[in-house]
Length: 255
Image (tube, rainbow, N blue to C red; front, side):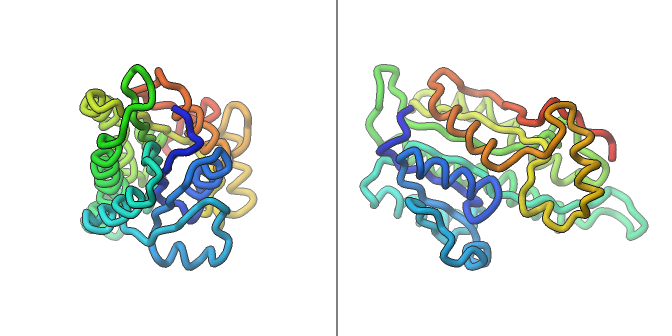
């Protein structure tokens, strides 16, 4: 898939993985539309990268995502790339000294990470399917979703997060099969420990402990490396229905 001259939709685009991905695709020649919450967009102020338009959107809202997709379609640049990075990572055990896991917390994590990903995927796919094919195979677009290594080795306290990311991984093959007739590929990236704002509050000792647990290279991943992999997936036309771990061979311990 040729990136230049296309429109790319990136969720969670105001920070972390989404910001790095939006920047990379803009630099590769795409017209990038980044979706994020109002408060997240406000935090970055005037630091939006060139070529990126941020649209305040709650990915769990059908109406808001549809409005954002309509705006992208109305831009006149064909929507062909979708990268779902929006997510939350709140922790909690099934049982703790405070009692059973809070049901609303579990529901919120599932809603944002899994339902939000599905919501964007279904509405964006509808728009992509209405574009003209770009090659003899009938390819029209690519969707990249974000799971986590927690989908496979969830740690203590990650019951909600692991369930949500396991769901994203589980959607990959059926989504690729569902959308094959429209020429849309679907793949998923499962990152390990990435140096995003979610880790901004940890101590240096804790950070070094995280790095030591990664076999090689023994460091945290960078958001730019996620963006690099997302670009590779888009450009590799035969890659479809796959979940790719980006984790330095990390296999998460129980805690």
